[in-house]
Length: 313
Image 1 (cartoon, rainbow, N blue to C red):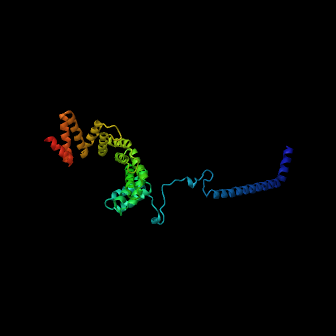
Image 2 (cartoon, rainbow, N blue to C red; image 1 turned 90 degrees about the vertical axis):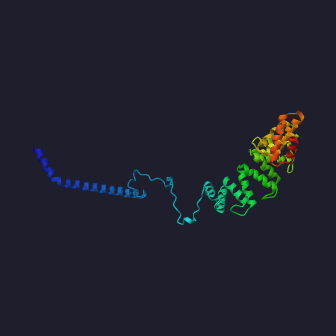
Image 3 (tube, one colour; image 1 turned 180 degrees about the horizontal axis):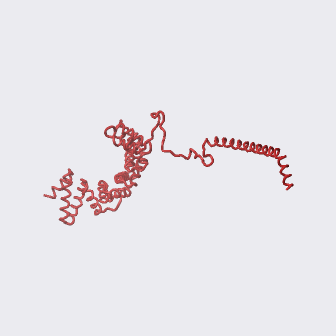
């Protein structure tokens, strides 16, 4: 009991200095904490500035502006200075709509499309320059655009290029290019080109005569119903040109052409049927001869008219 009393007396004797010491320690610790809080706040401000002031700097990552794709294109301040690119299709459609009412504008639009390598625009330009529609007739420009169109596979343009080089229209005559474009169009299946190429080979004017190949192209064209080629096939087989003479094949092709109204073919059918009548006394052949002679005579074929009179009398 006495011991406890002594301890209490000693505690009260030294409690003041101890408490002062502890208070001083706590003050120091508080200053240290404030110091580190200041440093922490300082670094927070720096980080916020680096992140652009975004409050969610800890989790937000801004996207790069290059990752945005906008369909909006701002207008130029001076829109009249801005070049507007139109598609060839749009240009041709507008040209089509005004080709009869404003051919000059249509030509401008077609030429813009042509310069964009549009085949329709190229062909339209060629036709307008060739016929002088919307401009002065200019066969040089016409040939230029026909050839551009031909190079893109337009078969009728290929045929026209052959014709223009053959006749020297818009250029000097050029045998090589004539044959090249005629052959190109023929190979691409154009019936008229096949016939024309056959005529060129048969005539031998600008190249070596080749009757066999000429007949080949005549038949290609004739099989597509081209009437001049059908009549030419009849002639070749009837006269043994490029082939062995074959009157049966000749009559076959002559009748094909005659049924399409070809005057000379009608006359030749009359001749072949009349020969059968005279050789074999075939009255059916005689009737067919008269029938074809009448059709040819109706179209003004003089020989058909004379022979018809002799047959009827």
